[in-house]
Length: 233
Image (cartoon, rainbow, N blue to C red; front, side, top):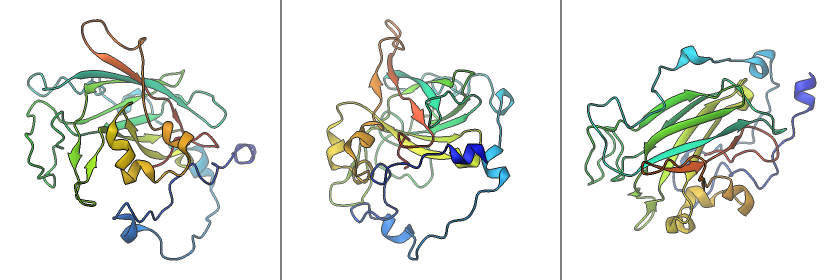
């Protein structure tokens, strides 16, 4: 019970509403009736747990393992997974998926008129270490059209799915890049009401992660719960 008592709910304006009319698909999938609060059981606050056995060596490197070098700008994305009190969350399962450098996913439903890259699958996974740290090596994704409204384009972004040390710390979110002009026009990014919370979705350029003559580095810390929680997708 003590773990539940310490939980601080996010501020009301730091998470997106279930329905945000400029984001068209939310009009169909948002709940039509008042939500019903379901008490958390022990299993939801104590599990599941993950460890290194859930990933293979190299699963966090999206630039290898597909028969050749993918096209595009190599980047390194690093950060820490934290709880609502700023403490590291070890053994968090982090999965990412993204478009290739041309802005196309390796998925049958993506028929965007952009080339596929046979050497880039666009998906990876890793486990956070004892200090909550993680890192991915990947290709910077391209922007792409998504037909939400006239001339709609998604900013460059990476999807992240996280399982912390309990189902209560489940998080699906998106990472954006600094200086992207499309952020001002993107309903998915703009559906978070609070400007400071939106800024938590933007990775920062990081010299410590950057590798000379090889790849630029970006830092993206992820807070799973509480008032400083990373906004949900």
